[in-house]
Length: 72
Image (cartoon, rainbow, N blue to C red; front, side, top):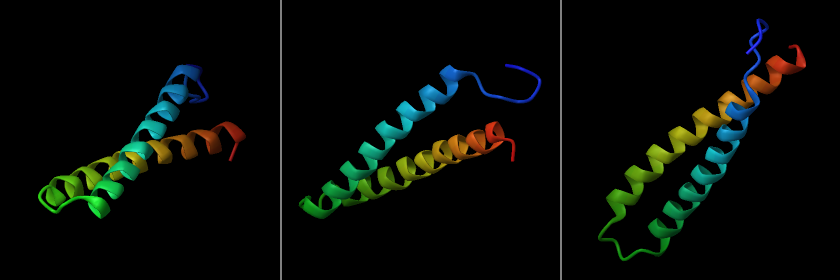
């Protein structure tokens, strides 16, 4: 990492992979909530909140990193 605060390439790549996995998990939880039989709705709702917060954190990291690299 250099002195200007740029992130290493592997960190951004890994965060993009996690965004993809978390987005898939969020969509899966939504589908299970809508099509499930109702017995595990609380579990899916908690998982949806957890994965959603993690997804929001990774997307925020990528946006802030991209803005910093553009020189804003």
